[in-house]
Image (tube, rainbow, N blue to C red; front, side, top):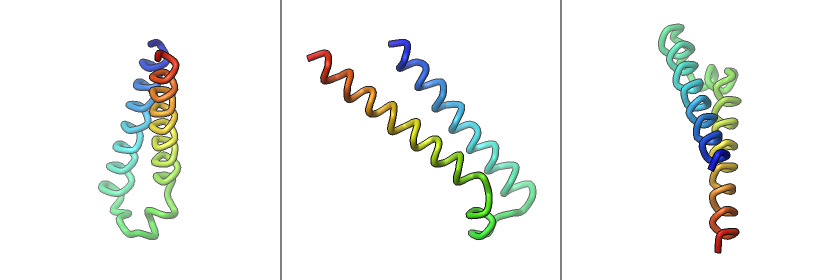
Length: 68
């Protein structure tokens, strides 16, 4: 139960970081080409959020099988 809440909090933090970084980097500074996207740290944040999501799904899957 506590791990589920921690996963949710960390995922919200990761998604908020992606949203803020996207807004400030690509909207305010006008870096909006594909090359700018590839060269930015945004991909690092997206991969980190995807890993969080995968770990949370794995945790839910394992907890569901252990309860049976």
